[in-house]
Image 1 (cartoon, rainbow, N blue to C red):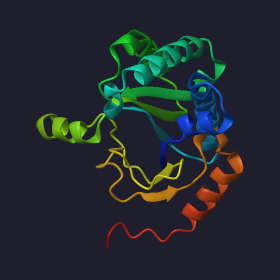
Image 2 (cartoon, rainbow, N blue to C red):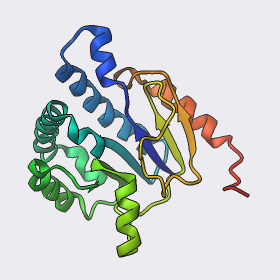
Image 3 (tube, rainbow, N blue to C red):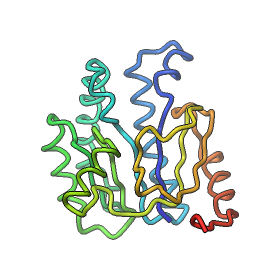
Length: 200
């Protein structure tokens, strides 16, 4: 089972709680770490997390903030014992400031045998498909079975359009920092009961 996650709602969480956006994004990153573990516990083979859309590149302040937070987390990750349980790959055009850290993490986890984790940075599904038409390869070379989007919006926003062709899609109104393991398990249980016909 391959799971895709669109972790939406960090900014609205900040406004709801009247806290700085930076604090909300930090909570979102911590929640992503927990979600990766939940996916592994659920028996997933891979998880794909939409960390930064290329559409956000025009929002300079947000991208600068996220880039700094991701850089901090990547540096911490190099000393994280849980890295031994995952294979981490970065997809998309990345962000130039993160390239060195991303390569180090990919190299450090390449031979691990656990859960595959794809982190989409400066990613565009449209651009990936255009690139694949020329190279016959995808940045995310897996078929996604289940997509979970938090935050109440009912769209994929360019998330892996080819890989998600036959995915079951679950939308929840829960803001990403408030997403719980209980709700995750409920979605997994509902997914496991789906009669998947793959368009037939």
